[in-house]
Length: 270
Image 1: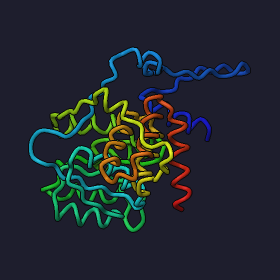
Image 2: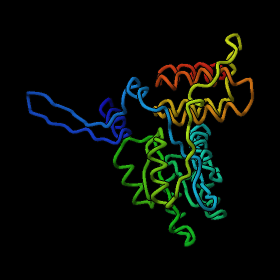
Image 3: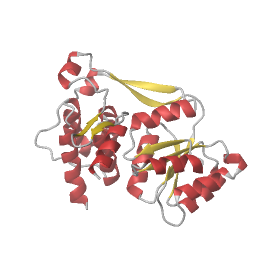
Image 4: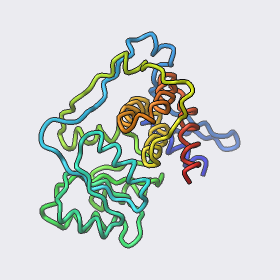
């Protein structure tokens, strides 16, 4: 189990575990990673980031399929940031019906669901002539290569493990849907906003926004956390102290503290 989890974590970072073993001597596991520069080095550079704000051309439609509302909210949050029109389905049977009705450009399909599995749903969708070429991406928490292969056999075009890596998802969308991104630039002032009243209480955003922040922090996706902070700030003035705290931690690349902050309010809500 430990090796399976380690393998999944390494795959999420776009690498593979290699092993050399000698009977009676032991085994050596290794992997190569491309890692970002340290926070100290990053601060020495011009603090600007290009964030994807949308894409050129007509609005695209995405069908998000998962039996868990939390998982759907994470995927929807990522796609909403790109201005996709979103349709939801809670199981494979509902996905087949909605896909036939709406003819989406993209389907994000969980594989393990009640009523009808994702494998079965993809097979049914591929039988529809109008959906023969729709982009279907399998999304699952499974770490087994067998599930990856079965999803491709069933008719999926690609496979993404949970938690979803936003950059990998956006890369798939760019190449498969031939999207041309539009960017917005985060300026110095956005990275260092004015301080709120130190006595003001930290009021957290709604649970669905906390869940998205938690998922982004699990992935270490600082640019997306900053983008989510901008969105929360526009929701209501009472969230500004929380947003300021979040931005401060994001500038320090402190994912552990971001997770602790968000988890605290998620647990209070439950």
